[in-house]
Image (tube, rainbow, N blue to C red):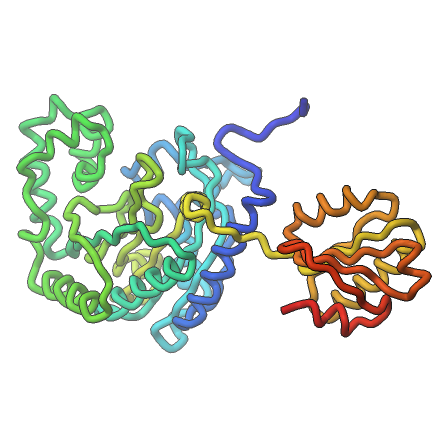
Length: 419
């Protein structure tokens, strides 16, 4: 038994699960590149103010979930709980707004929140995110949702639902906020402890509480679409029209407000019924005021989303996705001389871009075959003393047991085995 274990709420990721992760990451990079996104990498640690300013002092993340400490200089430092704030900080600090708009970035990495671990929710979790700066029209909203749709199709993840909403802007949201306060003030005594605080500090979060008693109290709640200004209503309708044009199915969910204070107008989630209570796999929305709040140019429109890697990988597992890349050839040497020959041949094939493995010379053929099967090899190349004496190797295709002969040093004959 190991003397040391992982901390609660974190996990090691290794074979075969790591292949699902790599498939998601590689596919996301390919799709995002098609849409003009470039990669951005930001630090895991930031000044705490980066998150308290953007996420909101009264959110659950800032109140209870951030990993925050003082460094030796007495400065407040936090592990990043999400990716957008760091990207916006980078965008403003490095004057990226001086480049031609719109600008498109994507990122990958670990995030940290101190919360109760459960299925699909960890204290160290991983996200792939994308952000667009400098485009205020609903076209980019639709394009981003289309990009998500393409990614899911490429990953063969089909059983999901796109849910969208508009939470308005600074002009129209105060009226809806007042309506929420008036509605829940009469029911305050029956709210959970967190929602009693939200009623005073962040009323929109009352719509997102997962407490069953609070959810029951939402019956008859005023609907946010009724409070949208003409500009926000027109933006949302145009988004829906564009999604129809792109043949992207969606449902409207007026309860999607997201847990972060910076969102404006469009908010959305991609949900599934296969992950229990943690049903959101991808989530995001607009944050048209955040760049200005970080000291950047006013009226810099922006939109982004984040993918939960742990949840996405679990969906791929549920769909029986086989992501482990095949080992095309496995060399099974029988003896030390055969081992040296096999190692030389493997290096020659690797230089030509062929994935191969070389076994140990002191293993039995039976053991070699088990290893080859574990690594999903297409062919086993057997080299024993008899094969060396004849200047040949014996190849065996694992899918059907078919066998053949190849010249022991004739690389092109091994290459010919590869479809």
